[in-house]
Length: 247
Image (cartoon, rainbow, N blue to C red; front, side):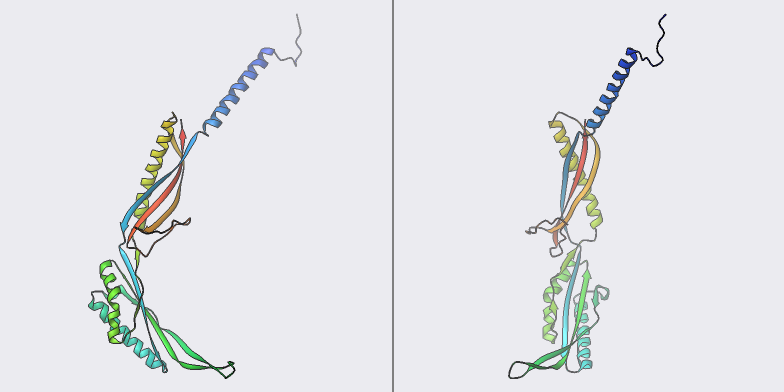
């Protein structure tokens, strides 16, 4: 009878080990590259909407050599402006008057050779702002156009262009994300079917740029996202980058 060496390994065992290793490696290779079969698409969605909040500002000033007189004149202007706005239908809580800004004014004095000799004090300049925030856009727009009527009262009020905002931005963004997600899935589905495959599960999703632009404007889209405040009628848009598995 033949005595086997304790270190002797049967060829059959070696062959079986090689076969099992090959199967395990093949399975791991298949799993590794199966996970790489993905389709990357970007979904998009946009929606037109109308602003529901308007912000308008104006400023006025008074000048005088006497500080108290300049302040008294400015306060009289504030009273007149507030009465005007209330007459136009605005409530007190819709208007905010800023604190008074005081500046001393000087004129330079030069000699015959053009050298500065001194700065001559010419009086005080006091400035105050009025700000209106309201949901009644048409009313405030009209006020911003007609406010120069106060010139007839001796008040030089400078009117700025109104700014327009939307207070339901969170709901708008959620709605656009849902539409962009559906758009991305439809695109991925089309790509997979045209390639003779089936669409699998969503593996990754990332929101892209959210932008607010004015309707019928030539505004450029920016990398960080535009946020228009000059147009009452706006367009919101969003992108969503997704990756789907392909079976």
